[in-house]
Amino acid sequence: MARYLAILYTRPDRWAPVSREEMTRIMMEYRAWREGLTARGHFLDGHKLTDDTGRVMRQEDGALRVLDGPFSESKEVVGGYFAIQADGYDHAVRLFSDCPHLGYGGTIEIRELDEPR
Image (cartoon, helix red, strand yellow):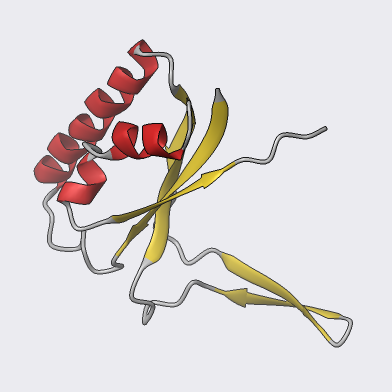
C-alpha cells in the first residue's frame, strides 16, 4: 500500500462561534472517524495544528526571511493533517469521503508520499 498525506484546510473564522461543549462533540466525531481508519489498518498519524499563526520561511536574495503566517486574511489555512495508507488515490478518496471535516465546510487535499529509495 502507498502512503498518503491528507492536508485539512479550514476557514480561519469557522470555529470562532463554536462553544467549548460543541467543539468537544465535534472532536469526538473526528476521533471516532480516525478510530475507524485505525481499525481497518489505514491510519498512520494525524494531528490538529495549534491555532497560532505559525511561521512562513523564504529565502530571498540569499537571505532567510521568516514571517508570521499564514495571515488571518487567508481564505483557508491548514488546520491539521492525517497520514494514511491506501491502495491508490481512488481508495484514499473513499477513505476520506466520510471525514467529518468535509461536513464542517473544510477542504481536504490528498497527496501521495514519495517513498525514499
